Image (cartoon, rainbow, N blue to C red):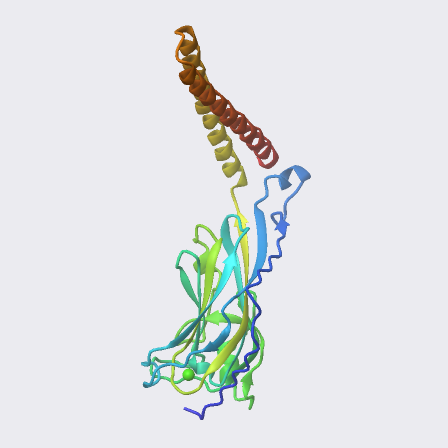
Amino acid sequence: MSPCRARARGLGLAAAIVVAVVSVAPTPGQGAAGDARRAPATVTASFVGTNAGAVPDAAPGACGSATPGTRDLTFAASGLPGRVSFVSVEVTMSHGWSGDVALTLIAPNGVAAPVMVRAGAATSADCGNGKDYEGTYTFSDGASTNLWATALAADGALAIAPGHYRASGPFSGAPVSLSAPFAGVPDANGTWTLRVQDVNKAVTGTVSGARLTLTTTDPVPCQQATARLAAAQASVSTLSAAVKRTTTKLRKLKQNDAAPAKVKKAKAKVRKAKAALAAGQTELAVAEAVRAAVC
Ligand SMILES: [Ca+2]
């Protein structure tokens, strides 16, 4: 292992700031305007990570067998419909030994996928590549450059050039998809985590910022709108029955000259039932309009 060349610069990330850039795009190749209403809704949004800072060094031990030091950066994802179709993660970091660093992205439901794991370490006991991380590195399936190969290149560079790279897993520089592992996540909204680990003792580093960009696609807006309409119709039916029931009870109380307190209580129940029905009818009107727009 080389001498420690840690460059913790503490660039510092301000308080948690969520930046969401949302766009809704139609399906590529759609035809007439009428088809656009049936197009899947695609949304892309970016979220700034929180909890940037120094990454704790690994505990003492041989390469690959030490207990890692961990820093988790989190992203509060919101406003995303449907399933994940594309993932991009950007991390700004400095570290004096890229072979120490393991980056893992974790979805709100716990599904995890490697981003970059110990560049150059072909086996567990391999200490990996000694080039630095220095700058901003973006990982996505849209990249054509392999970071592992860049790290191993005998180009005399001290640091791996910042840029856009493919993800890769442990013990291999072969590119892996960063998007596919998350395609089955049922809800992209929630807390995503970029786990930054330092797996070997001595050289250290710092993560000064991160950003997660997610694209999700809702492939079945018509089905969802139909389900919403059915639920609204069922609700109105139930609420109408409640109005009828409470009204009937009130009428009987009056016919039987019930105590004023009982009549008053029954009137309150009628008012409450009618208010609930009015709200249900409003939702039904909205559901009908939504379904008409997307189906
Ligand atoms: Ca280390």
